[in-house]
Length: 131
Ligand code: MN
Image (cartoon, rainbow, N blue to C red; front, side, top):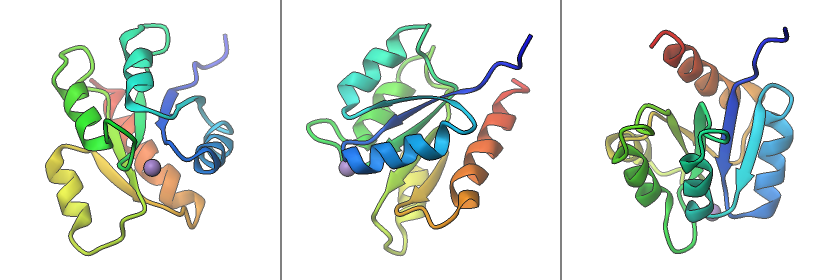
């Protein structure tokens, strides 16, 4: 039996970024993508599409990434899914701001190399597998 691939959900409203992330992630993971927080909540509500990890853009229309995170952490069956903030903001202090909001890690766009993307993902996926 083949090893089960981990599922990753990417929530990103910019179609170019979304495609780029999918292209990177599909080499290693079972990847799903959506452009809004509402769509993401749909994926999360269905056990068949519920991911092992979420990459979440901060700047999303109507409901932003921080609000989506709050929804996720408010639900007992979702709150253990690691959520990585994905943002173009590269100001000093942002990392602390997103971690204190409850994100498990932070990746800034654009992605400069594979390690910047896969490092935090692998760390969180392996931390979760012992639970
Ligand atoms: Mn955005």
